[in-house]
Length: 265
Image 1 (cartoon, helix red, strand yellow):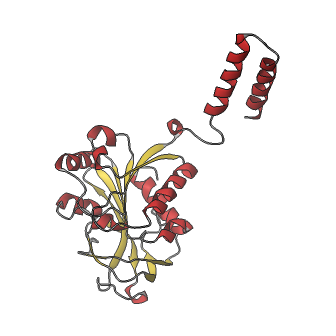
Image 2 (cartoon, rainbow, N blue to C red):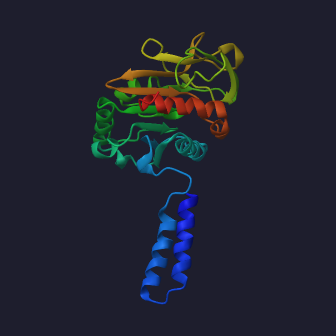
């Protein structure tokens, strides 16, 4: 870039001494180049893959959604993938979804899709697409059984936000291999309508003796993944609080989930 800047400076100095219309053209061209050459980063065309962040809500709306979007955008810039964010279910068409390696359902709630949009999401997964569910993605589309299988388990209730200790069950997965065996953090810990263990690969489990309000007896999964219906599904119960998205360990957890669902271990 230093050589390019020197060349541009010389060209502009020469045009300053000209008095013909060519001088104006050269100056305009030099100015245009300054604006379109990327400075210290990749263009979207050079990114490894693209991710859609979807955060529509028809129920409770988390105040942490903007922080979550910002965190995923930062992860994209740092790790070479493009990020688009939307709350418009209308983007769920076969043509639009085909360009994304993964779709992040970031604290979505309620019934979000019409029948055509449901068909598009199902077709996307069946074509090898990736689904990332964050926190209240499990509080979404209760009347659509296929979505319940995609996310793994639906939300039941939760105790107040508090500290808890998480046992890391899978030490090799990209979303957990950076974590200590016992991970202590503060969040809103969901109880689920059923235990998904028999149908998913459990990554993280809450220790019910370390917090008040576990309704899942001695086995309380809080993050999991699976190959599902031709694609990949990854879910984490963390991400209620705004502070979650500034925690290095949680951000790495989220990054690993995105990369795994996108097929980029």
